[in-house]
Image (cartoon, rainbow, N blue to C red):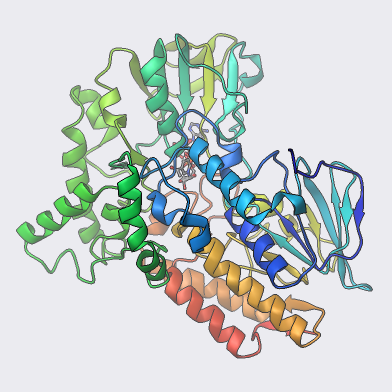
Length: 542
Ligand code: N01
């Protein structure tokens, strides 16, 4: 039986909370708010749960966190759930969300296929007036936006795109019914996590694959593993410890940086440590490395050199190898998210795979037949834009959310983001956001954020209810101080050197600034809890 609510044009007049978005954060909010006795509804633009895992159904879309940590920590949700792979694909993530839905009976409180288009704060009633594209509206006391870091796809304005006669999709807007790559001439623009995952699948079946690379990205070995029932039994014994450990680590994983400088150990010791991290796979070589690699250029260079040697060894053609792993690092290692690969570099040893270095051979335009670069026309049947997102802020600025002075969040943040503790912004009372800007977000495992940051949001709502407080608003001075704190932290690191989405630098015209809290989860929790312990210092409560 389909127990999903259908989109309707109804109105919810008496909600305590409206949650927007049914990814990890939104689902966590819905379940916990219900449990705490709030009257809550969730609105989701897609037809199913999963958020990023609903939209990103391109071939090869896959988690970059080892599955056991990429799930909710509640035992009743994992006790009878087994993972088939260490790094699950999007289909398995969707099945997982279905499992969670069945267990928690979430869908009965979710309006699917309903996109929130606008929200305005009604000061008189101290309620938000929320509108959607289906006519459904709501007047909740609080609005909790969980649209995530990647809900606004970015398609660069390349001349002629609409002339292309073949299939053309952004990675995050892939057709839900799928499309075959077999026997086709496939082109992929963009070599971030999405681009290389599509490429790895396309190289298996496509007649020909052309990868358009602007900047080499520094990928790490995933070390995928198929999991048996007994692997799952074994892993489950460790789950409680691993989940507990997340709170103590920078990225919400069950491992952390080595508390030593890469430069204070002997070369042999350093190489042995790097070999070990490399062999472990996943993000170990990034978030489990020496603790100055992301801070000190010389230390970083040792990681880059190691990475480069490992990478060059996988590619036969030295000209291609130099484009994928150049002698001069395109950015300090780890300052762009180092996506995980299964066999990406080896693809270039195949006859049907071709790399176009568009930094040297730029795209002139897209034609009806394919992509025209200086060296000629690359004819294609399918063109994938894996060109990323207006990340971190796009999910919020995309909605016409108007605050007390009638201005939108987009207008407020035109010259830089201002938030208090990465969950609220002045002028927008009773509005909270999860996995958004100036919170650990892109540095943090998604489910860890959903739970840890989620609890901070819930605590605030409970605190207010207990004291019959009906309005909160971030204070200007406090959010300026939070912004400065983010800047002070990032200035100590190498992150500002990369044109990454972490820095808002992947979108032309976007303010270049750190968008993800660079202090790690423990410090973030400490700062937030200090405000909470001081009656939510920095918020005006009324
Ligand atoms: O996007 P990206 P993504 N002309 O921004 C290129 C998560 N994720 O969707 O580097 C030509 O990383 C751009 O080039 P350059 C993960 O957190 C996770 O791949 O700017 N090219 C770059 O190569 C990830 O970090 C998984 O020079 C243009 C690419 O497009 C985040 O999502 C899977 C261009 C964009 O890379 C984003 O990843 C997928 C232009 N005009 C995504 N504009 C998992 O594994 C941009 N590019 C869980």
